[in-house]
Amino acid sequence: MGLLDLARGALRGTTADYLGGPVDAYNTAIGLLAPEASGNIYAATIRQALPEPIQTGTSDWWAQKMGLPQGQGMMYETGRMIAPSPRGLLTAARNVPIQELITYHGTPHRFPATEANPLGEFDASKIGSGEGAQAYGHGIYLAENPETAINYSKEIPYKDFQKKVSEVYSQYNSPDEAVAALKEAGLSDAQMQVMKALEKDDWLGFDYPHQALRAALKEPQNFDLSSETKSALQEMSSVYKVDLPDEMIDRMLDWDKPLSEQPAVFKELMKITDLTGTAGFLAKSPEKTTFGKLYNALKNQNSQSDVSEYFRKGGIPGIKYLDQGSRNAGKGTRNFVVFPGEEKKVKILKRD
Image (cartoon, rainbow, N blue to C red):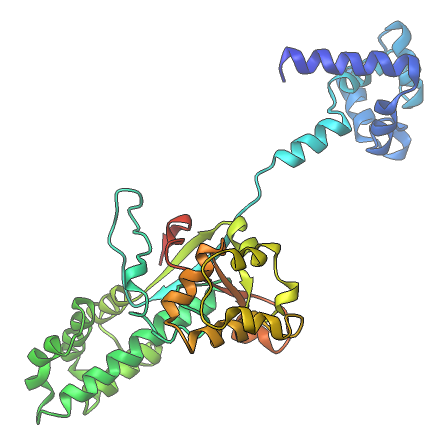
């Protein structure tokens, strides 16, 4: 507390003595001005601090009000002068920074460190190297529910990884003969480490390497994995904790909502170069047509990357939609698609 705060408090206290004022009403409301018998902890604290009555003149009225011996209202007077005003509390509340939404990203990759972030940054040029489906638009996918990202970090590596391993080993009589050929099949260094570790683990007792791989990825708790295999599996996929700014979320278009209910920024889209079919599609029935239908219609006539860039130029940073576990209920946690060109606005906070 500075001298300026004390001066303001003293002014409030002095004014209240003559005008009755809002300070006393405020302090009464929070329980500061109440009899000790009613459980007023402030009054009890004053009694403990000043066991002997002290004559302090005009402050005695407050002592009587609080059920204390004469003179002990002095402590209340002091507290009343330095207590924050309601206006001060509201100002402080307005100045509290709004916490950004924490989201999660599951991936089979580990991002290389950059000068700006030792945990790495999103690279839009790598879009499609994960699951590749891009079912809700072309961009970087983030999940509000961490379990969604964790599942992706396990499922995405398995689908392509298992397929490649199965194809390679079907060409050889012995699993061990095919290890060298795996690298040529396009496996990453991290995936190769998994296969070499499983080879040392005698393929966990399975006849085929892709069976061992499935077991290690899907049911690791049911098998006696070596520390080397466990370590290799951890290096193969990552779950990133990501800070997604609220202002981006507010400007994202909702996949399931009709166009008529979308943010006003949607109107700005008509000011930029139109994509084939957009104007006609909007003219049909914007109160019934969802953004998802519009996006898919445009995707049928243009590349997904062009459609995303079209909306991004219109001031829209991405798409939001309810995740699979929430869609039936119509509410719950969401997934987000950040369009290429906007990825630098999100920040990676942690990697597991």
